[in-house]
Image (cartoon, rainbow, N blue to C red; front, top):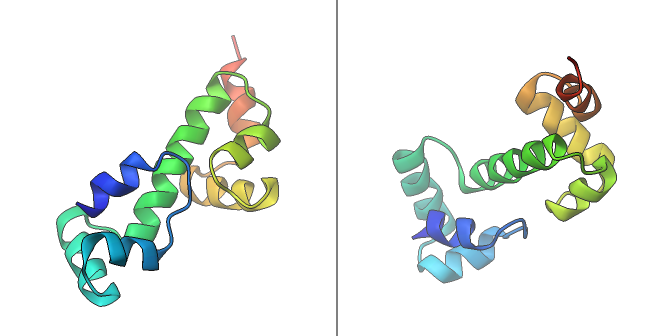
Amino acid sequence: MARDYLDAQGSRVVHSAELEETTGLSRYDLSRQFKKMLGTSPYRYSVNRRLDKARRLILQGHPLIDLALATGFADQAHFSRLFKAAFGMPPGKYAALKVQP
């Protein structure tokens, strides 16, 4: 149920209190059950989902600042830090890879 709710929210940031209210579970129970089922926390799942969407938008040629905001990150710097941590390179370098012949 929590995963379905997160997936339905698109790029919108969902806070834990909202997820707790939606599922009827405490923060602890929600986190424990989510991690047991999916191997990660609800927060990390949400961030990874938004980063995957951003990666697709990069490949479509969207400007980094626009896609950072469109995928729910506070700013381009925040997005870039998380992108590099997840994919091992900054988003600008990732974008440059797609134009290589």
